[in-house]
Structures are given as structure tokens and as C-alpha cells.
Length: 253
Image (cartoon, rainbow, N blue to C red; front, side, top):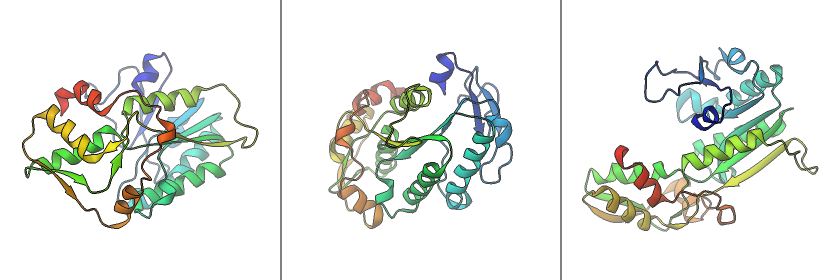
């Protein structure tokens, strides 16, 4: 969003909770609309006149998670009615190969996009740098810096992903003939390492006390990570490494 405004584009932001004027999360130059894709309220006004739609909505739990795909359908229908030319959705790499409920919801929404009458693109990203930092920070409160046993990560900068989403949304090139209306693109970070290596980088950058401990992660997410499904080594498109992100985010860690 910040990049789109900075590039001179007219940006409308749809959110259930619009940040007040002056709030850190509010971007000057963007127009904000209060809307709810779970009910459809306010969507039409938010997308009116939009040439393209970039969907970074999340549904992590409860009603939002259960209705995540349906919310995508409502957004796409409103975009189509508004005459938007393209819709781009942010998703997660190999989400269709995990049984975790959050990942299943992403895959279901991807299917909605695939069936849409619009030109649609799904950008599947690896995990954000901030996810690793959050996990390490939570564990360090107990003097343990957790690393999932047998897991490698290929984290990516949110800014790099945002640039990709914007570029994809505005790309004038025609879509491939073999799939004229829908594409799925992978976008990964610039490096892949064992989670313990990232844990030590985080500890060095933050000065946090504690010991890096390898812990087993059971269930669907554990299998997803151990099988390396969170990695896309053929799609190392991101530029900012985890260490670089830590240096640039030092004031907020």
C-alpha cells in the first residue's frame, strides 16, 4: 500500500477496522473504507472505480477463518461488478498440501479465484521474516529460543512481497495462452537455512538471553515443515535477508 501510494497510484483500502487519522498504520494519501467481506457490507463502495484489486485479507480464526473463501467470492463479485480488470491474492506456498486449517482456508480461496471470471493471479509467498521473529521472541520470555526440529525456512520480507503484488497487479503483459485467466506464482526469500541458524541471527541482533532449543512440532504443521513444503528454492525472488531485515527493524524488535 505504501509503495502504491508512493508510486502515485490512487489507493483505496478496505478494512473492518479503519485506523484513525495519525495512527501509525494509516498511510497518508490512501482512502480508507470500512467493509466486511464476511457479510458483504461496504465492499461495493470500497472497490468502486478500482482498476485492480490486491487481496491481502486474512482469516485466522472463528467466523473469519470459516468464511475465508466465501469472503473472497464476495470481494471478487464486487470487483467484477465494478469493472476491475484483475484481482491478485496473497497466499502461502504449497498451502494445498497441508491439512492445517489456516492453510486449507487459503487453498479453498485460491480455488475461488481460479473459478472467477476475472483475470486473477495468486502470489504464493514463503513465511515472512516477522513470523520467525515473533516465534523467537515469544520463547525468549522463558529463556528458550525455539527452533522446530528438522525444519528449514526461506523467510521473505513483507516489503519484497508487497512490491511483487503491486508489480503483478499492474503488469500489462498478457497472461499465458495456456491459462488465459488464472496464474499461480511462487515468491520466496533469498536464502534457505535451518531454523536454528535464523534463531542465532535473531539472538545476536536482539541480545536476547536464552538457549536455542530444537523442539518437535507435531501435527499437520510439523509435517508441512519437515517435508520442506514451506520452501521454494526455485523461486528465490526476495532481496532482503533475515539478517538485513533484523538490522532494518531494530527499533521495533
